[in-house]
Length: 367
View 1 (tube, rainbow, N blue to C red):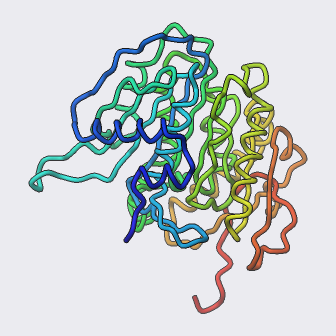
View 2 (view 1 turned 120 degrees about the vertical axis):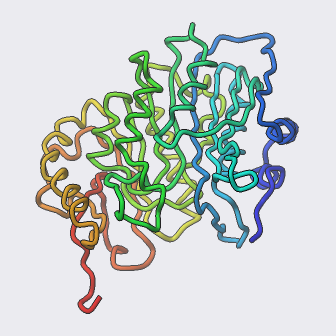
């Protein structure tokens, strides 16, 4: 199993020489479980605050179209670092959630790595132990290091990982242990990150199948705009290059336009690389409330059925394909970018509503 080292990833992505130097320093720092802190110098005002949570505790190996093997979480760590370096007016928090391991079979090792950048410079790097219930430790580190004086900074939150399940519990899907961490847990984690009652201006969920009424409803108290995929998403994730040099492309009054530009850039980068369907949606949280409230009851019933009958075959579907969810308001506040798959039964599907729902699986007889 061949993985790309951080330096190789940076070269593959054609990052600058300064990035390579910084990544080399990070590798030295990450050998220690004690905090490494560097005092900031020539501090510039913090206009942007970015939080990256990169889940790496699972199967994240994938291959590009040339056959090169990558660990999705390691590659995203390199890309997030490049964003942090190239934003002199930002503070950037990067949490890399790594596989759990033990020393001498009994003593748990740190399974998280935290990087804090300010004004393009790495200020703090430390290992930490994750809390099984969510972003408890991450929230503590975030509030400890964030610039308290920058209340008006544009705040972005980006999560990279597998699908965050909407229903869970023992026996739900034993092949995915991370299913114990559900959207309800994710919501509770957000409550800790936004304990000062400030919302994130933009939340990006670079995961599969989280562009749903239920997911958006649960995050509505903590975000102004949400970008997610209501369909399957390749492990190469949403591209984050549009986050570099934020002061040239983003101001608080046009966060809506920026969300659309981010989604378009992510879509354009995925399109030539993969053959499966590509769906990226931007949700204006305030404007979509009418629709998510209208479908709240039937969606809750579907989730309850899955919870009560975990062996019942179910599958994702475009909400527009189910009469129970097809309502006039479903397109309000949703900007959708869609391309059908190059093969399979959905290759002739010409549009997507931007909302994903659940239905009974249409399995062939005999299965």
